[in-house]
Length: 274
Image (cartoon, rainbow, N blue to C red; front, side, top):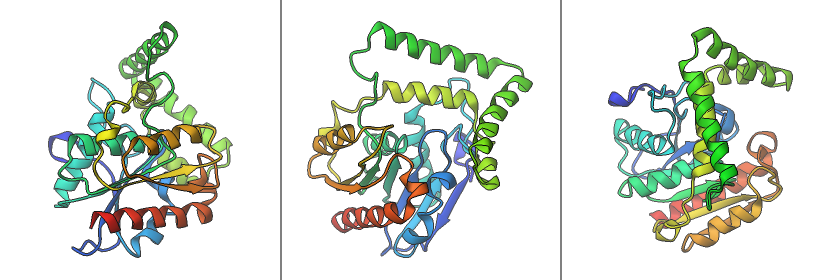
């Protein structure tokens, strides 16, 4: 789909769009795509919801970022533009990992469109986001430098950087279709997204969230510690916590555990949003 002047992205849609079926917009995590993150989720949720998922800019077949690079708030504005294109009055963003900040920013920047939130394996603040010290500033400066170098490098260099990512996933036993998904990832955007996550801190405004919110906590997560996920839930008034016994990749490798919890959390939010 082309989202006006913002660019063209890849959208997956499942389930019937109708007034009595709430729309869930699935927002994937860093370095993934909508298909990789939610491959086991589409069909179960589509039985009762209208489900839409898009590749974030710089990921998969998402919008190619401009020279100013990847910004989380641009991803949130992309979500609103997608809702406009599909003529969706209200949506419920379902954010996984990096998709969590995108979901929160979608609420903050487009409050009239967001009826509820489902936040999975994510946090309102990532390491390095508060009290930026010299070391962290150096890291973020390095991230910017690497991203700039990748963006201005000759095409053959950028292609080689992408191939390294692809070969790593192939070596880790990813199926062919999953390897094809990540071939579209733009290395510079991935680097910039990492820097954006390190700088994300919603602590000053999480208490203003005024829509039904469910926080799906991955209790064995070593990427986003469970305590940070619980802190996110505690900061949002009236939120509910939905524990799932698994690590950060539970959505893919233990879908039989993850999907029922996610479905219940979505029903809790949509019931209250109605």
